[in-house]
Length: 110
Length: 178
Image 1: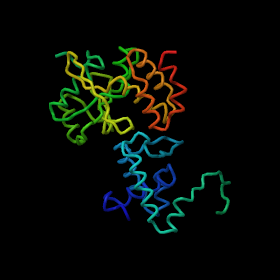
Image 2: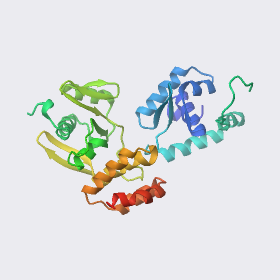
Image 3: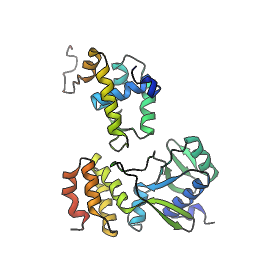
């Protein structure tokens, strides 16, 4: 991935670009989006929270993460992620930025 | 040496701070414990947040804390003789407007403590209110403002930089004691 040489981890990049695009997310959701195992995603989320980059909240039994508004380098980090997304293939950009949050009836076909 | 179980929160923070400093670890007291000190104990917090101002490694902190009897439990440290817990929020020490926080030194019988200034303590508490709607933190900010000379222009500029000027205008009177 584009920022892997800087971040040292493709899963860290996945987490950060996902949160940049969607504002919040949880491990299984992010892993499902990138079609990968959720454990390394969870690991990166926890590391980023421990470093003060992300904060989490419990929603039911799910731990939802978002950027920490108090992180010192937040604006710079978000600008970097925004730029990274702009270099992604168009189909991935569209998928990332398409954010369906409105309610949808259970079992309704997509 | 005063036993840990008899130390006040501030004394314990100073004791831990001094020990860490001898181990080459620079920390600064922030969070609710700073409110406790600036309110002369009117507000009491169980947590002692020592910001890891110079990015010491977890292993180094764990080793130094073990030397004075603290055990790491997840992200915080506990000691069998006290209910206070110690945490090390990651640095840098700042409050969002690009400037480093102001740090003051206080002396206690158990050691010297580096602590954020009353103005930065108010910013710290207001950040919780602004970003997460924590009204207890707003009350703590008002409590500190009522006991210390604060330059509200600094708080106003910082609130603007946080994108929270409208919220500041709503609570300004409370900080002025009106």
